[in-house]
Image (cartoon, rainbow over all chains, first blue to last red; front, side, top):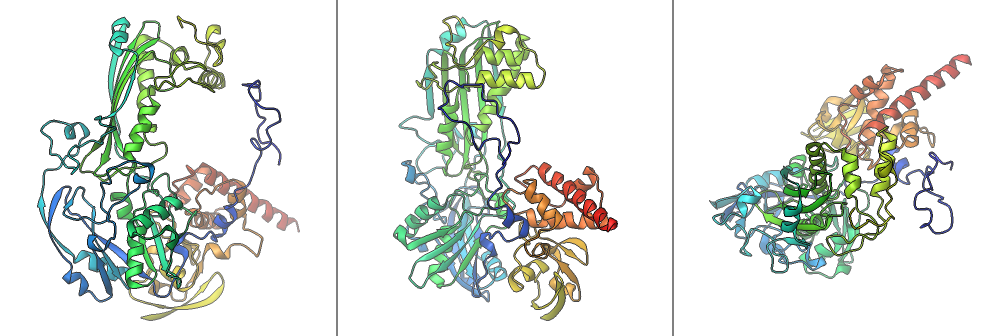
Length: 462
Length: 163
């Protein structure tokens, strides 16, 4: 195939191994595109089974409540309803997404037991002959509640008088005995004292729903061998297999996951929310079972990108060198952990951005509130932090009347710099990327900035 | 219960319509045509778009009992054997698909546009696919592919006229 664009091979040419690029710059057709344009790509829901049963969920009506009673008798009277499933039917009633990467406690029940921590939390699953009967059955489950005080704001959740919503005893995830994922490098207070100006601003974001056009779902088919075949649109087939087997308390070899075709994911289909209950329903009824979110469920209860609140305080010299950066970052995990403790660690690992700053201090909090649990989404932990960091850079440049690109070049990390995490930077390219971007948009840079390179060591006074 | 007779992609078909069944469910679960997708089941995403007597409709909102005697066109009927329609080929060549879930509905909306307007402007393409949600591509390659398909069709029509 011909190159669509010539590749610039000039940068870092000394670091490349011998040989030419052969793929980048050529056009390679997607292997799945022919199926997409002919309608033949097989998504999980494109399979039909003659005796397919359907799962629908009765969900919490409250943000935070104690469950006093659950009455399924009216649901069972609906024609077509086959079974109801409560937490007692779930062999190991805990989602274990993070246990697999060594993070505990396991804080989220598959089906609620004695309390609910967010509006829409699943309490009872209803299995029926038809989707309509399952919806009707789920609507007829009666749950008695005692409402409890709810908290919806990350900083309010950390206040001393906030209601403690988590059974572990704190409204934040505990990182190796600490209240936050911490970053300590140099001495920020001394850095602030040495600076000409101090800039401190607050940044915040709302939850963002992935809203894939295909909603989260699966079809589970019992096999004559006793195994369960799971047709799923998960983004993480092995995550699904492992987590589902642990919840079912069955050997991994009992499950077979067929996936890989995802009608939009963006991180929203890694939480293993539908497969365990569909497997239990299929086992109890010995029928193929479909559990797929409605659009309303996808929007309300599938995990969004976490809302974040970020305070950044910078000490800067008048000529644009950042001497100290202090960050207080709050990730709204919602009611349960899912991937947020990991995402918060990622946020901390990303600080202070791609800049070499001699004094850095950060506390990154993973905070629980009575909101829909948040989880993975495209660069989670990093994306919102970048929004805050780069907004901060622009605002400082404006306040000091500096060119924002020169301000970034002045502070850009270079090969050999010691980062705040005690890693030596290597393979950096921020300087070259800014220089090229400036040239492409006709933004003129002074010669001293054009002469900078990522591989030239930063001098003592730089 | 009602027996519905209709033509789908040029062939005579019939199915028993249960109360509450939509055209989308009849196509997918009774006629085995799963190209049209259920994205929202409320007429908002366009993934289930098919042509009903030549007009694009969201099939999730069309009661199955109302299509007796109708002519339905779906994504499965566009290609002639291995030969794709101009819209399909332009989507393929222009990398206008990503996850592929919105693609069948998007292509049917584009086919309907080009059937009534062989030389649309970019704005007219935007308008024609405004009921089709794509979460992956950002729409630009889709709009370009529809314009490319229009050019291919006009070029083909021009060749036909010379003959």
